[in-house]
Length: 310
Image 1 (cartoon, rainbow, N blue to C red):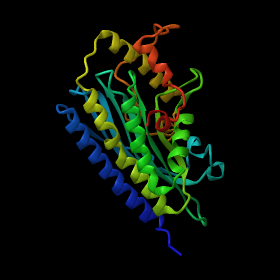
Image 2 (image 1 turned 90 degrees about the horizontal axis):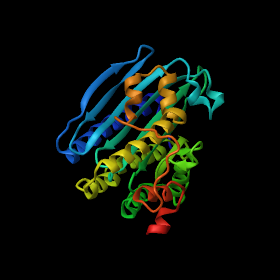
Image 3 (image 1 turned 180 degrees about the vertical axis):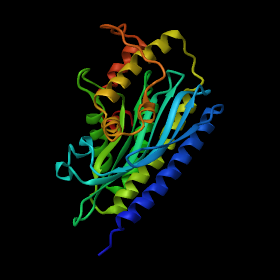
Image 4 (image 1 turned 120 degrees about the horizontal axis):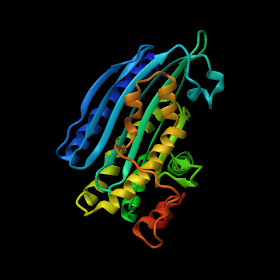
């Protein structure tokens, strides 16, 4: 029987991976942008822990982007972390993760988001309870089938070593999670989402988390290269700003990571780093039938992209 690493060992190994992942993501994104660099901001949380926020603005490709690491701990889990696990309420906790969001200038390049995270909850005289969460998702404004297919192929291949149902299950979970109920539409074309993962032991779950985090640059950067030089004008930028409003709505109304950060006393500037630099709301607006803008709405519903486009 394989012995599970201690809580201290688990935290140390995951933290080392996450800090390295943050470095690799920033290096890859800076190289893709070609002009801007991430500015680092270290911060500390009064109740315990802190983080390393890195933000890029006004690059050649990225209007705004952030790649954040945080490790916070405290005496009692916030309500957002015990919503699915009420038995853990009142336990002390340690939570760490890397989250990233990229908002490109060019509306033909999608906005994208990802995160990978790890929690341990402890109580005197009881075994620690740990779990992983994370995922990657894509939010296009002017969708292209080859981009969507590439994105989901990379996501599928990242999950394949961990079981034939993993991609399908996490893809469906992503569609369900990133769904704006008040708009009756998905936030984008999905990807992967998982939470409360502890099935199969620490090594398997940690391996799956790493596979998802490591897949992001392979999934996203080829899309950037295909679309970065496509022409656009004020019409496309205006539509991008309008659709960014949906991104804001989801993050403020539904996102569990945003809620956890605010409830746990995290750094507000880092938590709200995910917000776009500009967004727009219009009253009762609908796109012109048959327009490029109207085409997006055919993509804002759960679909089997690999079967349809492959």
